[in-house]
Structures are given as structure tokens and as C-alpha cells.
Length: 249
Image: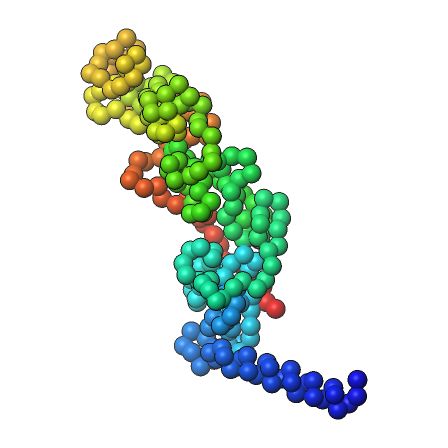
């Protein structure tokens, strides 16, 4: 390539870079010193020693704003409107075992009650409790009726909407709802009758007085542990996340 053509190419590339940078707000002129990229939601600009420098969010995360998100201003894409059209994630996924991206929350390959939390490519198995199932769309544990495609729990094989005794407990039992068990407790001074399968006034053949002693752990289904009952489940997302140094270009 001749010297003239090489000089023209350099001028063209410089002009393109200046045009692109002009479209992004100068972080050095903002109070936060950090601004989002105007095209890519997994990139952002930060003022560093008076210069506007572009950074990448960790793989799988998008820019959420300074002091927001799970690490260094970056968060999961579904948490809020962080990555709406026409913005896109430009960095391709980097997958590891059980993780589609290095950072994220992903469904289990064989279980509806378990899921994976991935941090820098390391997967940690998590468990939905209290009869909840993992909802791929919500990225959290949810009521079974909101999760399609999962088999019913064997506790509820005989009656998908009936009650099932809980081991030797006199005041706790499993209530099947649509084939999935939810832990219930009889009202005060009542006991669970294993024959009528409902809470009754004692005594019964098995229970004389109500007991508040919790049953041994082995009496509960292996993948169904009790949680406080509520109108809606609390999303069971990855907690206790500590900040990590952000990767730089």
C-alpha cells in the first residue's frame, strides 16, 4: 500500500472513531463519571484521568448504572430495562459446564426444583424450597402452576389435590396443589388425622395433643423443604454476591 493510501486510511479510521465517540456522552463531563454506551448494553464509558475509556461488563451482564447491579455497575439483563432494542449485547457468550454465560442464572438440566447460579464461569447448584419450581422465564423459583413441562411430585401421585401425612408429625402435613406438595400446619390445638386427611380436634388414633416439635429432616421429601407460606414466592436469586474487579478492554 502506498504512503498516500495509508495516510488516507488512517484519516478515515480516525474520522469514524471521532464520529462514534461524539454520539456517546462524555463521562468526564458528567457527575457520575460513567455513562452507558449508545449501541451496546454490555459496554460502558468511564472517565479515567481525564480520558473517556470504554469498558466491558463481565460476560453475561449488562450496564445498569454506577453503584447498581451485582458487580461494578453491571447486572443481569432481565433485572430491568437495561438492554432494550435497539441496543444489543455485542460480546458473544462464553460457556462453561452448566453455564451459558460466565455470569447468570440458568435452569438445571434434569431437575425442575434445582437451578444453577454462575459467577465467573463457576456453577453453584441451588434448590427451590417449599414446593416451588424453577421458572426459566422469571429466572427465579415460582409456583408450579406458572412452570410448564415439569413432572408431578411422587407424593401427590394418588391425589393431585389431596392431603398427605408428614411422617409422624401430628400438626403438619403436605397439601397437594396440581400435583405439587406444599407444607401446611394445622391451626392451633388441632391435629392432622391420617384417616380423614384433614385437621381435627384431638385425640385421634395417632395423636393425643398437638405437638410443636418439628419432625426429623428425613421425614421430609429430599427436594421439598418448608418455607413460610405467602401469597407469592420470593424470587430465589443469587445472594451474597461480592464485588469483583471488572474486566477491562
